[in-house]
Amino acid sequence: MKILFVNQHFLDVMGGSEIQCHLLAAYLARTEHEVVYFAVNGMQLQYDVPYPVEPGRLCWNDIHRIVKTYAPDLVYWRFNKRRLLPSVLMFRLLGVRVVFAVSHINDVRKWSHKVRFDAIGRREKCIQRYKSLRPALSSRINHAGYHWVDGVVAQLKQQCGVLVAKKEIIIPNSVDESYVPFHWEKPFVLWASSLKAVKNPELFITLAKRLKDKGIDFLMAGKTVNSHYEQLIKEAAVSDNFHYLGTKSYQELNGMLRKSLFLVHTCEPEGFPNVFIQAWSQQKPVVSAFYDPDNMIRKGGLGFCSGDVEQFVLDVERLIAKSDLRREMGSRAETFARETFSLERNGRKLSEFLHEIYQD
Image 1 (cartoon, rainbow, N blue to C red):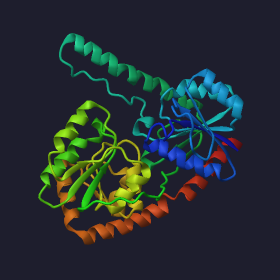
Image 2 (tube, rainbow, N blue to C red; image 1 turned 90 degrees about the vertical axis):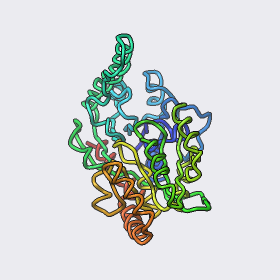
Image 3 (spheres, helix red, strand yellow; image 1 turned 135 degrees about the vertical axis):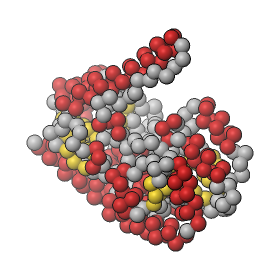
């Protein structure tokens, strides 16, 4: 079967969704499938990966060109709802079935952007409403694209039963355990994500300040998205227990997690954080301030989900102090990761589901 992956490529944009697409595309390409990757807004002259990559835009000319060149049997779409409605209609017009893979909480919401009204001044309020109303309307319009989708792949139980779908299946994210060795002189905890508002990086910096007497370093890794966070990092760097290490590759993060005490997570609920399964596969628990996907952390004893800031600080402090508890949680986490996030198992499950959609 010929499968066309549609998403940004991880060599252009280092994100969880892009990494998952690459892992699955590489797995399917080495089995019985032919795989082509439509790299939306791709920027590389060459992609050193084990499948062909076609950069392009989600417009009729590029979609038509790629479909006519490669004649895919099915599209695996993991690009959220961005231009979903017109793109799905174009694929259907060209006779190609579409499977949508959920990768963010907003994928299952009809209205996934809040319209803000907190600006001061008439002119500022008008500008704010226009800027926030446009993506909200776009999200709602593209939500109609699900009516022409043939199947939905969810990551979590909480994402199921929401979308219009002829067929639906849960396939968790997968993990690649390979790592680049990492060395740090002192014991440390790690925060890893892009630095933007929904990730709450300020809370990790506050945590480092409040626990500065614990003899532990607080390492932060991830891309800064604007000057506000660059300034925040600069101010935090005065503390000798906080260190910002910049953007790291997937394998570099695995190496850092392998040497860490545990992972600290401060993000709002989005999808299924790749960094959770990276930590668990390296035998490290997770202390999450607010988010526990499908209650995995609480049910499995894989760390703590605190629920509020004060409990979050207490949970981090407790896990720093108790090495036996870290080892116990880490052992459970590694077993859970091996049983749940195996690329071989999840790849086979996806292959069977795509076959089912194609033959229906």
